[in-house]
Length: 201
Image (cartoon, rainbow, N blue to C red; front, side, top):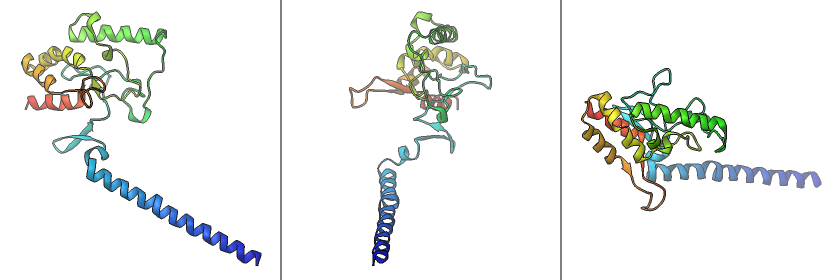
């Protein structure tokens, strides 16, 4: 009698596990996936950015616009620095975790300040802070409008485009605050560079 009762309990528990797995593990997953595809399909699929049918990145993940040696390419707008892996590595998302008094951070900021000022032909004191520091994730796809505007003349010269045309392109890609008051205005660098490439066609 005890053995039969124990088997019945095991049978009940097993059926409960199977039902819970089907309802919560399979059913719930399918419902959430369907809602995501119907409501925000582009975002649910990674917010991919395509050029001529080929995926060139995601509007949610920053990337570098550099040559094989890691040097910034002057014909592209540059993203903010990244501490994720070797830079903008989505599998190693992180910040440097250096405090404001860390000598390595201070040295890195001064090195970046000098490099950006020389590249963009501006006073080092005017270089925006997002050109000098990495984001907490190391994958921020945005820069401030100020940093994007600072790069206009360099990009225009490298591409032999009118400065006014490149400046207007930047202004078209300034994204306002979320809901009109949350956060700061930003520029998505990948989307801006895709539009920039279209100017040359």
